[in-house]
Length: 213
Image (cartoon, rainbow, N blue to C red):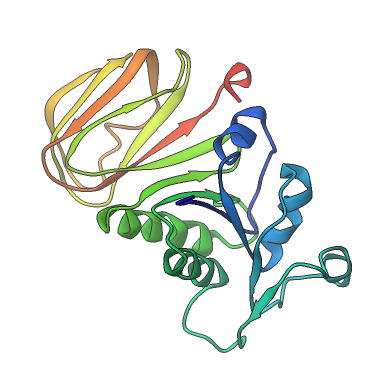
């Protein structure tokens, strides 16, 4: 099994869609991400981190789960440590659950950057809170399973060259999108979302409508 779900400490709604996405996954929890295990109905094979955010209740409830403890004075976040362990265990695809929201905006931004690096290294990556999903968008073609009515944005990490979006309210055809442009904010899926990018790197952020979660 090459898909791993990494449980992070951000916001998470245990939707039917998310449960289906992780059904075939091995699971690793990163510190306070363990709090999502019960809601998702999963038992992580490992609980990793410095445990500075784990409560006594968490420790008692999940005492049977093997742990990998690290010093608080480390040079990686608990989430990145969990991802590295998953890669060592053969992970090819990831669902990073609890990647959005939470108390630390800097951690949320880092999750986007880490996911981009992972995608460039050849991993399939989905960031999710259950209601919001993020997908790295790199040069090439990609199709997405979002239903009509899904609001999405394409956030460029640099200048985007030749961006094409089809099946959406505001289509684009090989468009140059300057870095920092809001041109690709708040679009909407009309039929099926297909994207193509000639050069650059971006993150597609989709906000799932009620009926699609």
